[in-house]
Length: 336
Image (cartoon, rainbow, N blue to C red; front, side, top):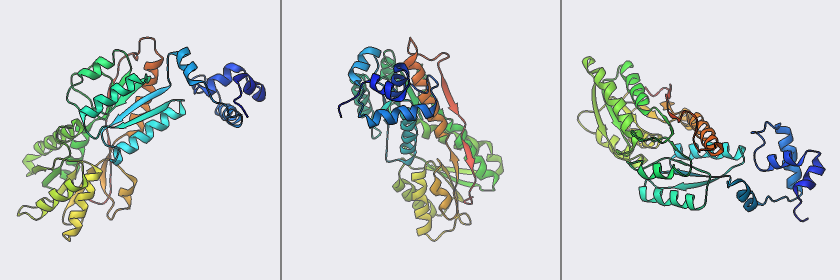
């Protein structure tokens, strides 16, 4: 059967052409069209092999209903989970999402942004890997840009991120309050903003409790399993073993656990563990891991809602330009 027109679908469903058009262009929720109606119209359109004329739609609305998402490492469970949340958010609102993995390369990031601009995406959400917001601020003059997970201290760009300093402080103080005094933090990429903020929180909490005999050390340079394994092996076979380890990511944590197990040490009797980032499998480890949970769904929802509002506004901005840090939470396991 050849593609049917909106008029045909309107006649078959009994709904007006404008209602059918809004549903099939992904604008149903915006116009508060009932989900039951959306599902019905979508099903009829599918049975009719209806295909929207995307080029005509783009020319008519000056939009492509396409968003570019840029992450630094899709192999990292944190970024794959965050990407899945954002993709689902945009899908529910009728947008197609293009995804690029920069592999922590600023060169790749710049290339991805330029590609998205040339493809005329409606907006870009990016986890930046560089140290300067300059070119992103220039791009934001013509296309909405929202930063997630990482931000720049001196920027006008909108962002929504975890308060990593608060999370680093919270994890460290938790260990101290549990009685641990010889602490080691295994960090990730040292130039990464989340890493720097977690480290700042770790050092500040240890310093605030130095009068109670807290000692601290730092190690590592990568958000990788190998980094966690190598640094833990070195520390736990030295003459001054830490009694608690703070892993700055789930991937680092896995390497830490592997080293601890290979050395025949017990958690938490010989060494306590706490991690940044949450994952359901951490509850199935023995013992379950205490960790800092980032508000991924909240970050994804705010970023999605904000960039759509920017796209739909006349000047490409959201009233009261936002820069949001969200406090993480602590999930207690039995590893401390």
